[in-house]
Length: 138
Image 1 (cartoon, rainbow, N blue to C red):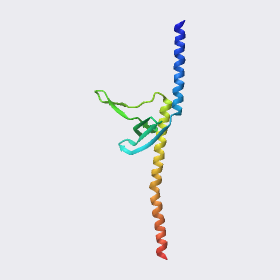
Image 2 (cartoon, rainbow, N blue to C red):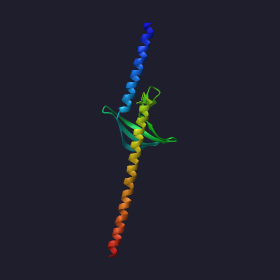
Image 3 (cartoon, one colour):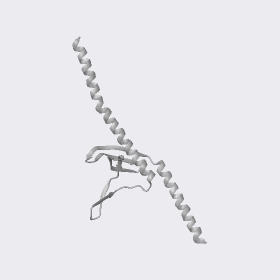
Image 4 (cartoon, rainbow, N blue to C red):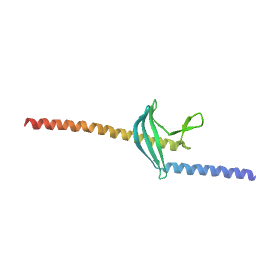
């Protein structure tokens, strides 16, 4: 009988711990900043992601594949055979999805701002040409 009670208590503790971890993941603040665009072949950009006030993950890669934008974690060499493995991984799928969405949104915002900056000089040149042409005729 004591074994069964002990097992039940352990299961309750595991469930309670999982609930606490889920709540912590939901409240965790994440901010991503694009640090470099097109740093290497096949990579669109690199990002640094700040998680809460306690950690920053650097060199998160943003790639584009058949499924759209993909977020890839930084890698390190592991072992004598020099295989690469993710340096950071999430134990919870929901937190990883939130992480990916944060990085993708930062990239899309960055690219939108770049597009706006590229278009503004052309508009300014057109206005100058129009104004210059009107003044010359007077």
